Image 1 (cartoon, rainbow, N blue to C red):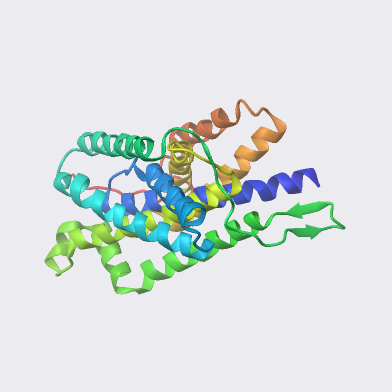
Image 2 (spheres, helix red, strand yellow):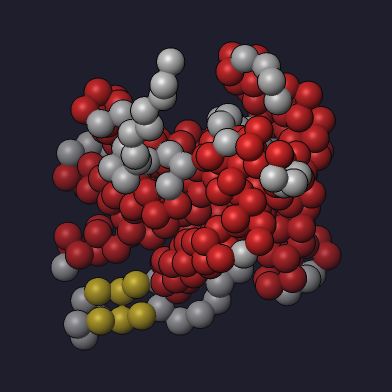
Length: 293
């Protein structure tokens, strides 16, 4: 049962990576930029949920709604103040700005909540699932995390495919200038994309801290980087690719810890990124785009 238990844990961790990776893949697919402050939005969402439950006494569901609302608004503000003025700037300028926003959010969190770790009480209090006469125990956090990932990916796919804003996103992704000529508000579409990605980051932050109950200002940094790796692995710009990359990366990390080395697990994860970039730069589900020059 050991391997099956590790596999389920990997899928659970990978589901968190997948939800985070959706933010990266949507922003890159539509705005053609990498928002490296995304990991810190995860941290803000986790702190919002923690404050709502620990200090105000709100229900777990209400705390998640608050976290999503705050992070959605934060995503819009970040896009308007930091990234919108750089719409036509070089990729390097956008990258430096994203790193600056990341450090800004981390230091604001340090000023407000200090660097002392806080114990995050899981918002999920359901009974664990026991299989094979109790030989395999699957925690409620694992079950909810996997289910949340499936629901989010399916819902997001339906929105992008069938809704009006989803069609606008696809049009902006293909050609911003042509979309603007057809009457699509490009700036508003990009803002909505940031809002959706940031709202999902809040959910990921709450699920992450429910599974690993230690909260600090840097809580989203490493998961954010690994989720970016998952987005590249699956094919950045692809929603199914983000899910596939996240789950595979989570399984690789957990199996690496179990059968190879706990110390080398991060190295194994980032080795996957290097191998993918060398062998298939577009990712598992990414598509090659030919450009006429």
